[in-house]
Length: 241
Image 1 (cartoon, rainbow, N blue to C red):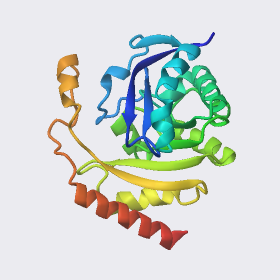
Image 2 (cartoon, rainbow, N blue to C red; image 1 turned 180 degrees about the horizontal axis):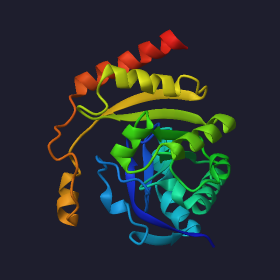
Image 3 (cartoon, one colour; image 1 turned 90 degrees about the vertical axis):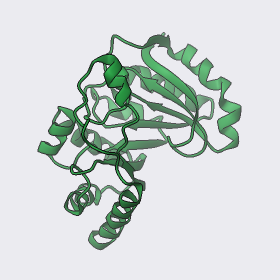
Image 4 (cartoon, rainbow, N blue to C red; image 1 turned 45 degrees about the horizontal axis):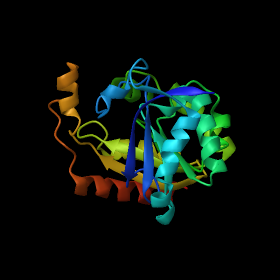
């Protein structure tokens, strides 16, 4: 029996892949993103220990709801790739039960990714930054982890939705967006690109946990400007591919 650590389960996810989805948040993450709205998922010693069999039972309770909408289950975090053995097994069990599977990841795990992707229908890939210095400033880690995961993703050919958070004065310039375009232009299995506006909804968690919030003086990103940048990125990609 394989056990893992999860933080929580959301039964009606609407922005975590196609259709209505059950979202399972894993515990533990190596990154310390400045804008993370789930700092309570960072430490591996938190959360709830559960077996893959018991987790599957919980997921199956919601199957009638997500089946009708063309949805499924999304494994998010934290960082799901820190628990690859547990993740691969629950993904396998979901596929045996004809459930559409998605993982929401920064690509920053412990390796063994092919085993996970074998049972994954869709990857929501959260690209934190486009270069080494920016990545480290924003997350506390270098970009190598993402680079390694991208190589495996391209080899396996799993469908990808690219996601990138637009933070005022950090990732909101056209120069930055061009670099993002250059980073992803050769990835053949991208189905969708989403630029997400930075928000401050998780700030209260930092206060409760007595963690310094690095972006306390940064306002939420304007949604219209974010959409303009998304359109700019798509137009740029058409020009260079």
